[in-house]
Image (tube, rainbow, N blue to C red):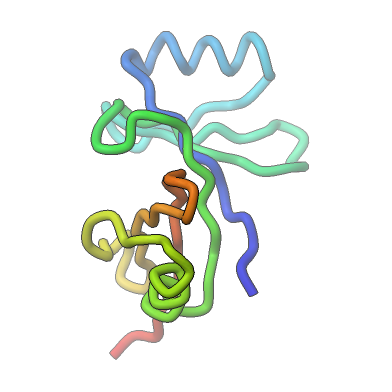
Length: 116
């Protein structure tokens, strides 16, 4: 069963967006370089996300943790969805991919794999 992992918000200006989410919603920001970083709620409750420079997916997305990306993609395709791009490594043990649902919305999938 999938669970909501985090959200992603594409931005044009990281510094401006970081300030906006801090000032308006109270999120803390931790950079992952110049083009991406995490926004987290200071009270530790609710979902956290990331800000990243706008790229392939120009709108916010929700990312779900699944047991195995390939299995979930197969179910999605059978239900009228489609995989968007290739499965990408995030770390040595984690991966992600985008998926278009039956209504044309793009969501993210994330899984963790056992080391070989």
